[in-house]
Length: 154
Image 1 (cartoon, rainbow, N blue to C red):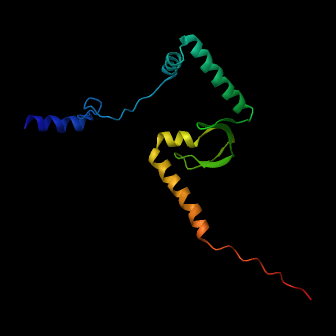
Image 2: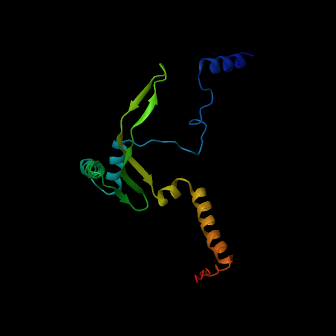
């Protein structure tokens, strides 16, 4: 009885009684920050952390500078960074209901590449590949189009 009351009060208070990180779950939802990325680069390529940090800074600076100038940075298999222009529009202030003007904005946009998408979701990549294979077979099954008849004007 006591454990039931304790579990109910924990749910009411908002405590999580089930902790997947302690139950040995196989999925890990981790985040990597800049420092951890620098450490990973340094260990993977036998660099000092300072060298890896300068390389990462150079890479990020090149991407930011290019996109800021309106260009695009494309890394095959990973994705592309480009500038996206958002047009000015009219919005509504939710507290007053008044219409307001929202200014145009230039925003950075990242579009993931096919390799990156396939690495993140292999099942979706397999479905897409199967669909692409089925499409040419369908096109081959269709009869060739008849040549258009020219209308003779006399």
